[in-house]
Every structure is written in C-alpha cells, then in structure tokens.
Length: 381
Ligand code: B12
Figure 1 (tube, helix red, strand yellow):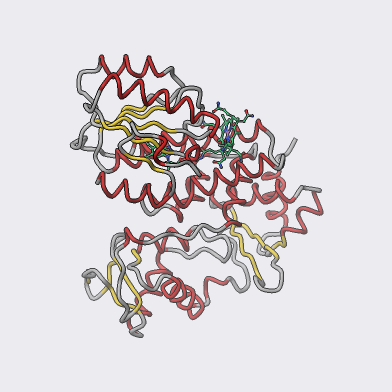
Figure 2 (spheres, rainbow, N blue to C red; figure 1 turned 135 degrees about the vertical axis):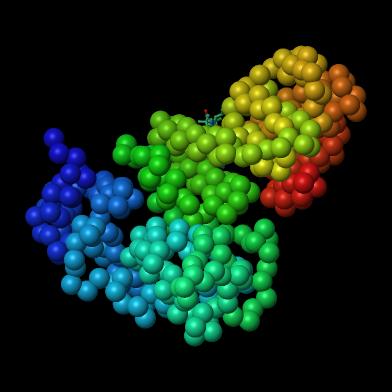
C-alpha cells in the first residue's frame, strides 16, 4: 500500500510546475488532516517539497509544490518582500543581537511562509545594512569587495540598546507546542526531523528546558488528564523526549571542574525527566553529574554515596507527586543523619508546590518555582 508521503509526491509529479492546495490532496486521497500535516512536514524537512501558508489573517490555506520546480511567481524572487521579512524579524527581536546562524535556522525552517536560502538571506542583510536599517555587531570580512558572512556574525537593528543573550526568554507559543505534541505522538515520527523542528526554540540548554520541555510536558499532562491522549501515547512522547534530552547531554563538553552532584528521586517516584533536565543544566555549568535516574530505596542511595570514591558536594532529590511529601521528609532525615553536614541537599519539583519551606529543615536549598530555580542555577554557576 502506498504511504501518505508516496501519494503526495505522486500527485505533485503528476501536476509538475503547479502549486497544489493541500485540501485538494486530502480530498482526493481521503487523508485525515493530521496524517497529511505530518506527511508534508516530513517531506518539507527532507527537502522534497516546499510548503507555503497563505492569507494568515483571513483564515489560512496551505499550498505545496515539488522542490526545484519552477513555479510561476515563487515568493522567493520578490526581493523587497524578503528584506521586509528579515527586517520584521529584527524588529520583533529588537533588543538583542541576532546571528546569521539564527536567521538561517529561522527562515530556512520556516513553514509558515516560504523558506529563504542562505544567499537570499545574505543579500537581504547587505541591503538592510546599506539602507542603514541594521548594524553588523561583529567585524565582517570582505574578499575582493564581496562581503563574506559567517554563521556566528551578529546583527542588530540600528540604534537600540542590546540586552545580553542570556537574559532573553523565548516566548513559548501554545500553537507550536500542540503541533510538536502532534508530531511526537505520531507513528510517522522521525527523530532527525523533530530535532530540526525545534531548532528555533534552542538558544541554550536552560531555555531549551524552560521554554520547550516544561511547557510541552505540562501540556502533555493536561491532554492526558482530559483523555485527549492515551497513556500509551504519553509513554511514547515521554520516551522520545528523554532521548532528546540525553542526546543533548552527550553534547555537553563538561570540564567537571566544580565537583560532583548526585541526582535522585524521592522513593517511589518515577518522573525521571526532571532529573535528565537537571543533568543537562548542571553539567553544562561545569558539574560532574551522577544521575541515579531510576526509582531506588533511600537506603540504597545512602549506601551508594558511602561507597563512591569522590564524595559529592550536593545531593539533589526530586519530587513530582504531592502524595510523596511524607516519604521525602523521612528520606531527608535518613540522609542528614548519615552524612551530617558533609553533603549539601537540594530538593525541588512540582510536588513541593504550595508547601511550606519550614517543613523541610534538613534541606539546604528548596526549589519550588521557576524563580527559585533560576536563582539556584545562578548561585551554582
Ligand atoms: C511524563 C509524566 C509521567 C510519566 C513519567 C515518564 C518519565 N520518564 O519521567 C509516567 C507515565 C511514568 C507518569 C506516571 C504517573 N503520573 Co505523571 N506526569 C507526567 C507529566 C506529563 C510530565 C512530567 C515531566 O516530565 N515534566 C517535565 C519536567 C522537566 O518538569 P519538572 O518535573 O517540573 O522538573 C523541573 C523543575 O520542577 C525542577 N526540578 C524538579 N526536581 C528538582 C529537584 C531539584 C533538587 C531542583 C533544584 C530542581 C528540580 O527542575 C526541572 C527542570 O526545570 C506530568 C504533567 C506535568 N504537569 O508535569 C504528569 C504528572 C506529574 N503525573 C501525574 C500523575 C498523577 C501520575 C501517576 C500517579 C498516574 C497514574 N495514575 O499512574 C503516575 C505516578 C507514577 C509514579 N509513581 O511516579 C500528575 C501529578 C499530580 C500531582 N501533583 O501529584 C501530573 C501533574 C499529571 C496531571 N496533570 O495530573 N507520569
């Protein structure tokens, strides 16, 4: 049987040189909106087709065509519009520097409007610099009077005060989160495609966690409570998210210069994604992380710490379920009784929401909300 992707390509080949409304394909082959949406996204990332969404304000419709086909008036040839699109991106992010790499990632993966190639982007930047709309923030190279732009070269809108990149929050868009969840649970999920889909969210590992993983998982929880996704789908999504975080952890080149942190769950807890996020963020700022990662009785954790060579500076205990508060208090007492003040203890997680900080006298640090978390990361840095 032909897959939805095969059917789309077949239809486009039969109509070479034409833009085809997606609705035409779904009606013709009786494909469900979700199936067709996932299939065209994948074909787009594999660079087999081009997607363009039109009339954004008055209800939108999507057209696609075979990549490389000569379409009568492709958007990409309209230089003025390209300049304006790029300038608008600078205006929307006016208080920060934007690298050429970011522009390429954003416009190269943009499936709301048509994608821009690197050379179209370079021309647009040259035009905007000439018209004094933007400023280069790094020294640009000229070769035989030709401007060479490198991925790390940065630009900003003219005459504004620049805020350092680390202070910028990327807004999380609910529609995008839904789109990502749809793809994460789909049977046509492809890991590499997914990584490309999320590139625009990823500035650094902290924003990756706060602007992508947390809102995405909260929404997964909501959908699951409203029975809009099944338990199996929730497991599939969690596993794919775990793989994504682990993949990023393997790319952290940690110098391990700041000492060891042990990460563990309160006894009985199974929510390990929090531990993976902590591993990612704290290894990124230079700690050596030992992530116990799976549920374990507290006595086994204590035994393990006693036996390892390099004594940890910190033990992080994560709690997600409120029903484990009593267990957490017992666990903390056992740990403190065993190690006195030789090890610092931090506790955190959703299970602490609405809890009184005085209830955990054994903990050196208590992280309940995002502000606590940011302060703690800053302190540890
Ligand atoms: C994925 C998930 C699961 C997966 C977990 C898979 C996995 N590999 O981890 C599975 C399917 C196993 C699961 C099971 C259950 N789940 Co569940 N689950 C979730 C879900 C959707 C996402 C959790 C998550 O990963 N979040 C992302 C992480 C990164 O965020 P985080 O945990 O808040 O961690 C961040 C911070 O809090 C902080 N942090 C966390 N710990 C610590 C520790 C320290 C020291 C520091 C400094 C910081 C820190 O750092 C992290 C990064 O910033 C949530 C929904 C939600 N609202 O979160 C429900 C949710 C947590 N689950 C819930 C429930 C009820 C359950 C079950 C009881 C369901 C059932 N009837 O079986 C079981 C319990 C299993 C168990 N014993 O633990 C409820 C909890 C209600 C409550 N408050 O008590 C939620 C909120 C869903 C809901 N809307 O009702 N779940």
